[in-house]
Image (cartoon, rainbow, N blue to C red; front, side, top):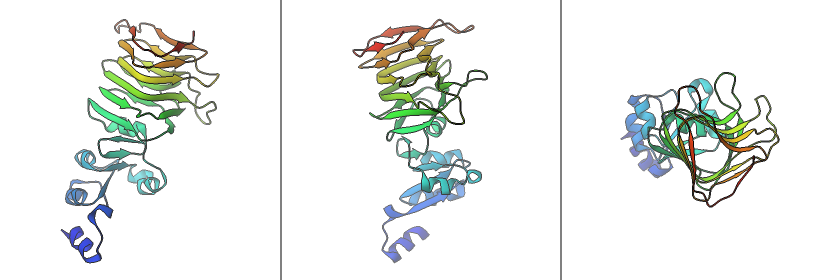
Length: 238
């Protein structure tokens, strides 16, 4: 009740207050303030109910939070990177992009929906397994993933990181709905590479590249990948 009393005394609405916490003794504060912020190294239960999850204390999270806009959200909780939102998401959750964003690649190892919300996500750093860290998205086996409503592309020049060779490296059941995969560089080898799973291209999905638009290549003991093309869009490439 201390926050409520201070706000009443100062004439400040609760909606204009911020609270920062990392453990469950901060629960009442987090539940009371207008915008609640939990540190990345904080309690998982606290992160789930906070408005924002910022980098850890060791990463100067509060300072970083003040300088970087939110990139993605799960419900009302906002994150400063797409990777952080995907990592925090529970199975089956929807991660929504909040604006045009340039950011690091993302590894997906859960059932999830990525709603690009009409925006463009541009990869400027890569992810991947040892020896193949040249990927924008790496989607791992035994997951159901949908990406929809926006554009994925990469920067032409990458400093301090390997160039993106594959926009999406997929091993899962993957549905692309109203998605544009755009290769505007000279270093992309595959827009969409599939090594397992059932892949569906839906809606007005477009693939634009001078390289390989998509392929299917069985990996190890994984199931043979299949691609179903239901798109009204255009697929151009090799």
